[in-house]
Image (cartoon, rainbow, N blue to C red; front, side):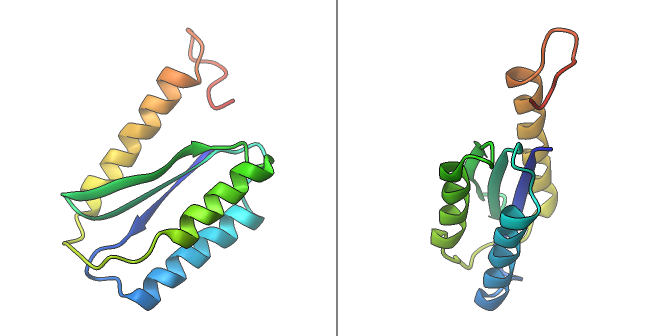
Length: 115
């Protein structure tokens, strides 16, 4: 199972809450994500402030990949800005997932997606 984390960095989240969010994602990646999975990280704060921090990286069983995921979380500092606009961020992540699944990882008949 490949997974993308969408981190809310909007004005409704303060520095302490941001730390809780990133620590939670770090724990999930470290302890709960399958070694065969790929992980992507996104953050958003408004329509104009959406960023893919890390494209699908993995498999998690690769120590370099897991280290890159954790390092990206730990070095991405909180930046207070913008309105939430969750709907837009979720739609963009879903579009990226769709593109990743259909372009990169499926054969012609739709089988074997998400290798």
